[in-house]
Image (tube, rainbow, N blue to C red):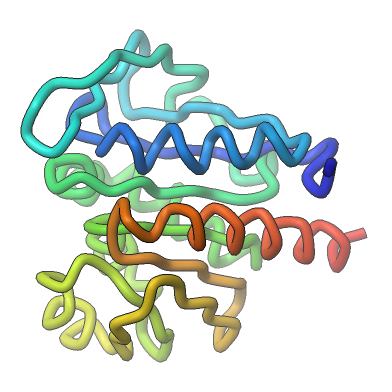
Length: 189
């Protein structure tokens, strides 16, 4: 299937701390659907992924967040890992990049601890999403409705927001993000 043929998807991660499986599984789903995945980070070079607390593989950065625009992409994926979104939410340029996808009405998919960056971007108010359970109170305090589901698709806002809780949810997360990114592409044309 080539549901994402001609579409470019940004994967925004910090230089260190992204949960490897939450990066590589959606990446493979995007590419299997005919899309182009691009790794965007706050620094050039390579990012260090992790398997929970253990070092995983390194991946080459395709673009630095300050050098790209939301118009360069059709959708955004925010992998989790505890350190990854914790770093991103302290980088104003990364937070603004994330917010710009919401402002432009482009779909975003987020998993695990990734919603921390969404909270910092102030884009979860009035939205329904899921996450790693420890973010439940953070999301509620930011005005979101938290649900405990394998995957949550929220269209109650300027864009489609796909969220999942953890690596065990990746099969459902990957399928939902491909479907929603393809639907958004059809609506945009």
